[in-house]
Length: 329
Image (cartoon, rainbow, N blue to C red):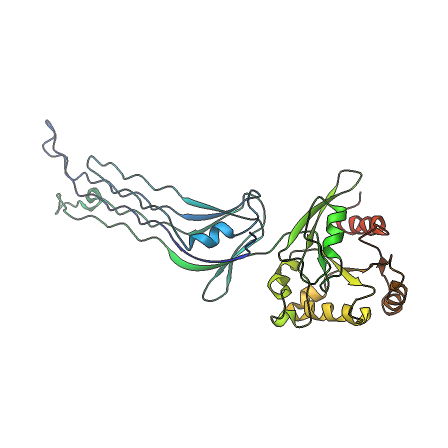
């Protein structure tokens, strides 16, 4: 199950209490106070890991607490600090304050870590409170509480290129043709219910990652349809592959359909609206596609014409994507 949002309460472990103790040994009649310090509470740590691809485990936890530090003891022995509670999240995870929506951490690379709730400091034992006038103190510090906060966590897929377009534009068919990904493909809208990544290799062993994103509809940026939930995934892509059906079954105008998607991207984010784009007219193998392709080429300067179903034009499209995304020597 693909889950890309979660809300969770995190709490660092409480520090251990300092000890009140006195050293009483033979031949050491004036041993004095010997209470050890408490151990530090454990941190709650989020770690980006390629071993996981969704936030499903995090969404099930609801509350994440680290262990408390151990209290100090006699003979100046400090309590043991608690181990950190490490939670794995996918690369591309954004951690926000649940109340203010402020972005606190953005975990992009595998192995990157964020301490989302620090453990409390251990309390000092009574050995620290001896003075010339009070050589047998019977006071010690309590351990400090760990940090506690509510977090809103969301996943933004990391891909080189993102396939966007209206439902049934052929995005899933293209991804299944050029990569080993197997998204659901059918002749009805919204077959893509969750984002899917595919790795595309070239002949010289270079690779790019392409994301198939659920179809957008007009008003998606305001919450219409399915696509609004996944617009944030496009934010991570360096290049938008805008696919348009050259002969829509509903009789709509391909040129207007391009405008609809571009407008939704801009409403979501001005930066996203200005992202580099490759415009792709799909289903060019169909006889009725000629008119739509002609209109698109008249309205826009560069239009790649392909058939994701038959493979026509796909090789040229991939060459363009690699040329734009892979640094040239």
